[in-house]
Image 1 (spheres, rainbow, N blue to C red):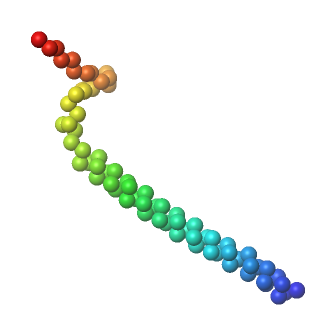
Image 2 (cartoon, rainbow, N blue to C red):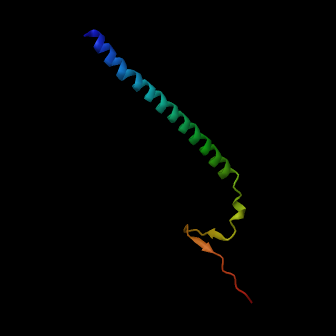
Image 3 (spheres, rainbow, N blue to C red):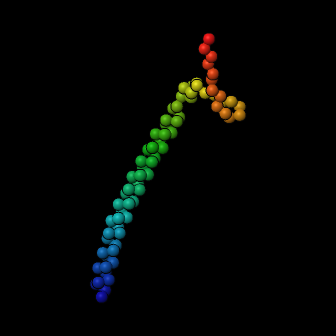
Length: 72
């Protein structure tokens, strides 16, 4: 009886460990990809030239004031 219990326990434990290791590796990989994406985004935001945004200005109320050009 003890031999059957041990065999059953191993038949459950071994696939469980394999699945756990696969999922843990996948989570680690996703975390690394997210960290790389965050670093790339931060670099993009810190290197963004605010002087490129000349078509709109924000007024004192926080609303966007559009430039109106008159052609004469």
